[in-house]
Length: 306
Image (cartoon, rainbow, N blue to C red):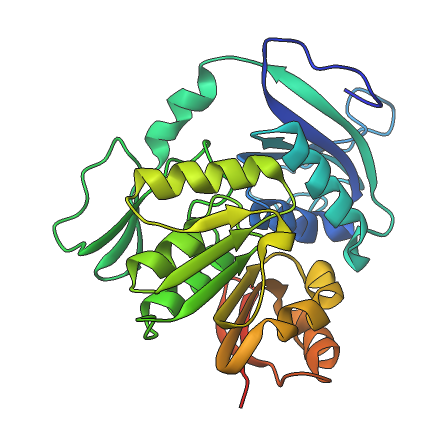
């Protein structure tokens, strides 16, 4: 779907279709995963044309090329708003130069996504803290559990950026602290903070659907928090969490830093390892960022206000 065309009544999911040069396919697919796409597929953008490129070599020999000269990437999202927000965020990234957003289109309601949910298993964050889909029993060693179903929310603990944020929460004293989750998505970080003893939690997002998702997931997990649009964040917080992407994090630097109380912590994710210096420079007027954790090419950066 493009322009102002209305989605058919049967649409349940939405696909974001991109054209990406070979050099940037990995970065774009990583970013889509960080934006919690339900699935990401890559295919030859020139398939069925004279420019189609085979990637299969002779038996026993390496393929003639590591990837197609131009790839077509299709990412599946829960909502049209998510797909369009992902497109907007990607176009701001330096690695998206030479790529193009082709369309956002509806996908008719089918059973295959529900069927593929059976592939999702409980996700360990620490030995005793787990993210568990509703159709699984929690592992015996799990003392703290968040119930969240892949495919029904924007953030389910499976991506490294989310796992690193959850690890940080689980390994720091949250008791009695006031917490802000900025860009809350499914609300998973806000719920984790509440389950680990935070006195109060505000969760905000620019997408009203994310706010609704956070409220529903908080209720399902038996925790109390306040969810709303970004203007609902007010005052200073002992912990400010933001798992977004590097470019919006740079733009938000003065706002996020202004919310960090004296002695409080700032925790940022959605950052590639090569973007660490950019983030340090962006936040230098207010706070000193350091790399706290790293996983699969992604990093977690933190700062404390003295």
